[in-house]
Length: 214
Ligand code: CA
Image (cartoon, rainbow, N blue to C red; front, side, top):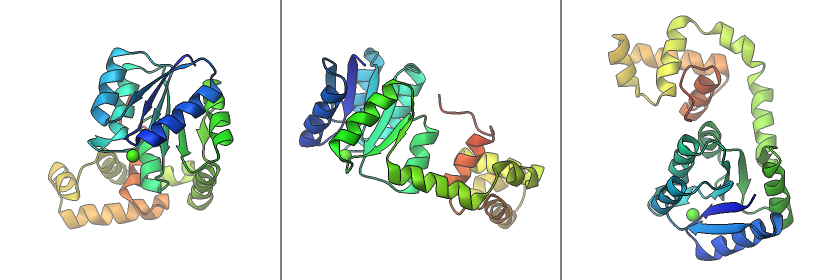
């Protein structure tokens, strides 16, 4: 990893992350961006080896930087470095193509080690997050079984909510009542063992129902 971009709005945290990057990759060139717009502009003009991206930025979400990166620089290793460890953010980042999701509360030496790991092509997750993802699969059971149970109409609804459509839009598209859509969604949630739109989107992407954001 010779060139690294750090997208982070807090100056102190930027410096701290730069030091960790320098520790992980001695001699690397670190460039910093303090906003979403600057981050997007930098990835458009420079081919970074790695990008460390914060999610909460003053002018928007780091996810936008991540999506742009995936679009224009598929080779860049992307890692989200954030304080937000909730399921919705994790699912959104992973489905947007993040190679890693690291919480900034982690010890420095672990962060440096995980950055080196990412450089070797090994995905990196903060241990507590890796455990949560494993737990998710423990409770949802084998995905193949759940998939087989969805009817073609349910699959159709899942594909549409996976693309971010609201119930009313799904109803209009399928020419059915909104309450029928709600009924389909309830059944889909039960069959997949999920409870949120973010998880539904994740399953839709996993089942190839929505085009991956690349
Ligand atoms: Ca922030």
